[in-house]
Image 1 (cartoon, rainbow, N blue to C red):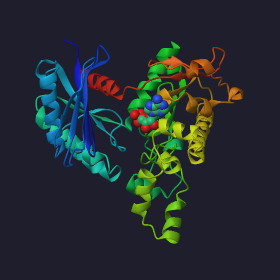
Image 2 (cartoon, rainbow, N blue to C red):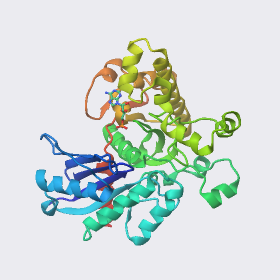
Image 3 (cartoon, protein in one colour):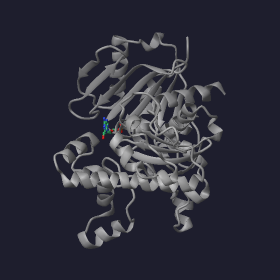
Length: 398
Ligand code: AMP
């Protein structure tokens, strides 16, 4: 039987899971527990080609949510007891300076993940809760933490150092870490495969555009610059996050509007981005509103694409020679307008989109640039769970 890994991703009110067959590169089952900790919850369990198994019930905590997922696996299959499970992989958002690769979880590692909550207060504590409940559910299996930050451990000092008092960095960990690393790792490797060239030779700009969005400059498989920073707030415009703003905004709003730093932080993370500018964080709805003549939605899309274009230009300069610009994430994979608006008119920089290829809908990895474009433009569907499962199996084989 091949290597099978249960991938667990705990959010503040959700638990996602996926049973991955690593050798086949496919998911055997996956599901989502929603509204965990709220009075009414829901578990939706999927198997390929079958109708979903949906259970509406209260899921008071992540332990109960995982229990409901295991019951669904028993009921609708595949039963984990017979599935040849070799490990459980956990998504952990922040690895700080401490973790630059996946790691087998023991009590000490779990403690370190909890300590890193200072850098990711919304994510690491709940990631730790997921690890805790899964370790109790599967005491006999290895548990592996895969960090969103790890792929960016290769950032050179010039890219990860903020020009701030050095004691902030030394004492409080203030530096660029970068996120979405599992996606950038998967997509940059898949892009090299699509180009038919060894990863070590390929330089790419990867644009992960989903509800969260980040750009990464990847040189020969190594992250050399990335748009997210100390937290996943910096960089591109996102669904509800502002991306880059002048940090003076915090003190300014305090002076002129009496807003506290926590309040501004919350607004920049949860009620900014496309939601603030267009009134919705779903790009499909943004397009509908633009078609109906909504000026605010049109401006929001302009701002979004302008920011992407600006980072593409910056990373072409960082890389010096670029082989591919690669789109991924819900928007990157599905929105030809965003791709065209972000890269249009860049022929002088070697980027020539093919309008017909770009507009064609297709689920797979594909080239959307013209054959004579010096820089290939690719669309590569990301698969963070498969990447996590692969990294887990690789770690255990060492
Ligand atoms: P993700 O976070 O990668 O799952 O991406 C989610 C986002 O992708 C949604 O909020 C939408 O804005 C966007 N999205 C999904 N499907 C489409 C589509 N067909 N066209 C444009 N945007 C899409």
